[in-house]
Length: 299
Ligand SMILES: [Fe+2]
Image (tube, rainbow, N blue to C red; front, side, top):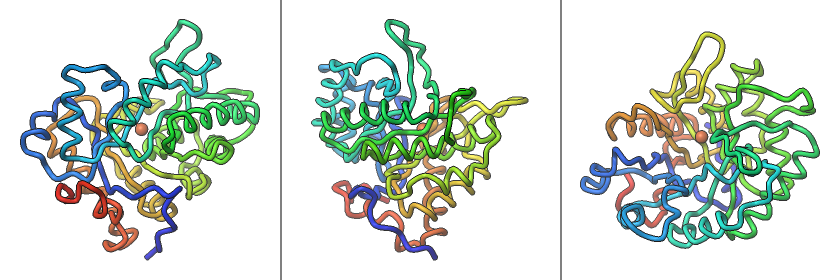
């Protein structure tokens, strides 16, 4: 059995959670199923009132929520959007999220928003540029910020390091966390032809504060990160390797297309708990979840 390393950047292990999605609202709000925690998409709740905030209050009454964003565009050449960041900070005050994440990518420039999570060139210059912005974001929000590795379908000839060296260098330079999306590693390793195990072995494990797991769609040449279907066996094996190296890290199941019943998605969370228990021993897993304020709702 592998012993867990110290808590990552002082953040708790919340156990295994699910993305809070609209088709599951009736079940979650009325049945209040046992679930370690939920991840919310920040942008869905960055409003002044109305139904989204009413739903947020209902979720907060029974569950611990962690914010995950999709619009920060950390790697963009544009200045940071301070209106966006102020709204994000207001939401942090409401949710008391223990950390907050967004993607290590860019999504557009000037007035053009491409609505996609685009990769960056892996260079020292980009590390310095993005790390400075990540540090500014974390300092302003006054909560631990984590960068998530994205799936990608192209790469830059100007890159001078591996993706995992790039992710790790930014996290170290900015003193931020890493949201390690294990499925994204698998998808990109297939699309670009690198060893996914080397990626998992190569990231700074003490900075991994959260992991993502998801299904994907395999086409003839490429795999697309569609967040649909169950996690495949190869990704479960990669997750076991990541947990073995990082210890008990809060994990989240993403299922965003063709969303099945809550119980079907939650079955994936139970599989993740089983993997953690197998790798770390049942006693080591989900210790943070048991200590959290939503103890009465934790399975
Ligand atoms: Fe993800």
